[in-house]
Length: 75
Image 1 (cartoon, one colour):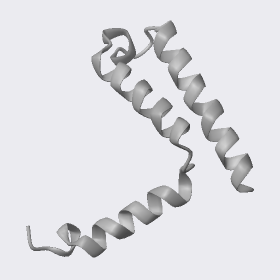
Image 2 (tube, helix red, strand yellow; image 1 turned 180 degrees about the vertical axis):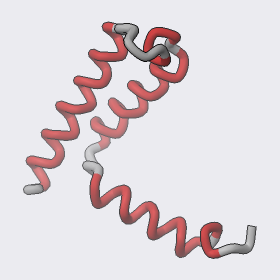
Image 3 (cartoon, helix red, strand yellow; image 1 turned 90 degrees about the vertical axis):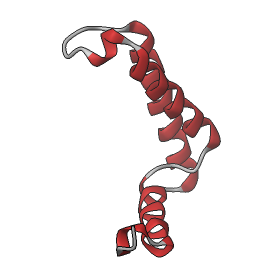
Image 4 (cartoon, one colour; image 1 turned 45 degrees about the horizontal axis):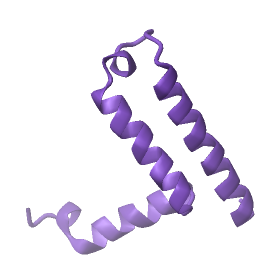
């Protein structure tokens, strides 16, 4: 655990790259977490081709929040 991938600088660079692409809106972050947490525990979400209304609704909520956050940032 002494390689460059485990240093603070490498972790900070990864964080910077992530935040440059994703909106910094707290609602978008909460929506993303809700969608991921649901999908992790939902058999339908983890099964290719199976439909899950809740998972799809959570994902749409995240997408809308992310679009709104990007438009407010001028991206």
